[in-house]
Length: 166
Image (cartoon, rainbow, N blue to C red; front, side, top):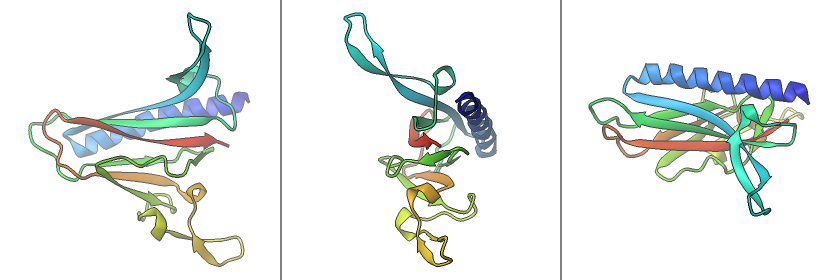
């Protein structure tokens, strides 16, 4: 259980590092990543409610679902067309199917470590029997969002997905 928490903390640092690196490559688009979990807490009225908290500060164990969010902002002086946000599905997690859908963005997946991307229904993998089969959510290694509208200077948004800790 302690190892799962350490893995998640490492994943969070990796995501923050990757987001910073992507932001530098894009020049005008700044990215910020966060990982969170939903926890049940008792409020001041004694009622249970769900609260979203930083995954690095929560007790995350195998089976928990983590929400990974990438916020983006055009910090340049010109519009950015076809802005792309790419996120690996962190090691020790499995993508939760249909959680990367975002209005206003084309969502594509990779099953080969981010070399080739395609729509979910078009991806194929080789099964244990050596035969090609349609890819499943558990096969995805990376997610890529292409923002369909040009990002005007100062425009902000976010994309996210959920993954279950193995």
